[in-house]
Length: 209
Image (cartoon, rainbow, N blue to C red; front, side, top):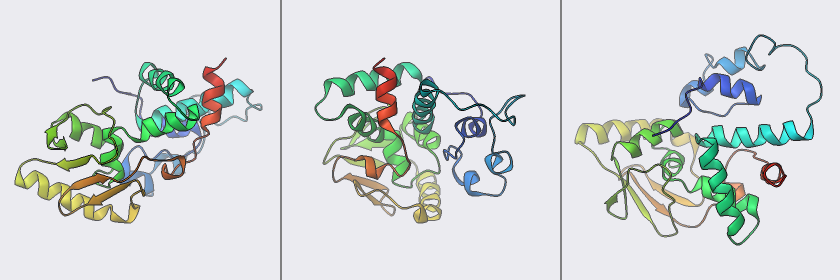
């Protein structure tokens, strides 16, 4: 299972904003981005010239990739699929990313990060409509029911972790039950449900060149 191996804090510093890739640590005083709000590398702290249009578009695409924890080839495939679908390409692209199974588990506040949710799915802890699914990129659909399974101790730990994450809140497109560790897909997600500003039009412009 391919994954990004670059240090999470370096990714946030490169994009110039918090991407919340390490869960609770991102809101703590130890967050590396708070200490060093400049790009990584030897010349990261130096003042740079105004970025070109291409650079701005590239950074927006890289930010979206890093937020959802996917690689370039898979991201490009999502874009091609969004181009063929009905609706605005950029908005459909964001919807595909938000509907990923690992993101759904994360957005339900059952894990502290998308990476943890990805591992939970990959280790056969998640069922969709009663069937085990271990593919993080699986896209949930309207009416789907997602449940977390496992041994009693494992489920207890997940429930306790979910209690500490309740304040994070859940988007309107899902209905989460932390006691039963269940999720109901009420509607398809929209751009407003993402909870982070992603300028999808810049990504469309980049791939349209």
